[in-house]
Length: 120
Image (cartoon, rainbow, N blue to C red; front, side, top):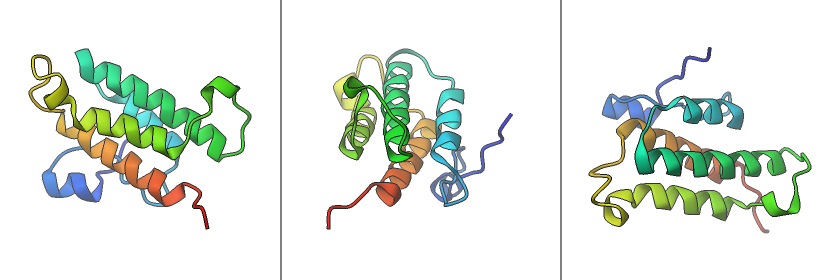
């Protein structure tokens, strides 16, 4: 079983997450995301991000994906925005997003920004 390293952000906050430097892969981040124990709306949003990020990873790695599963970095960022907005959009269910979840979401966002193709 993989033991996640603490991210730079997570280290400063004292919470867990994956440090997404070049030695960590998208698959490492997906494994860590799947290992988070969450409930309710946070679990739903984690599963949405996991699916979208995995589709993006497969496309980015050149693997064929069905047309209906084609996503872009913008789709991953939209899922991340939904997660960060949970306390505002679902206040009855979510007082605050779990800190470990937020740290991992930040690591995924940084990974996608670093690895997404740019239009030049």
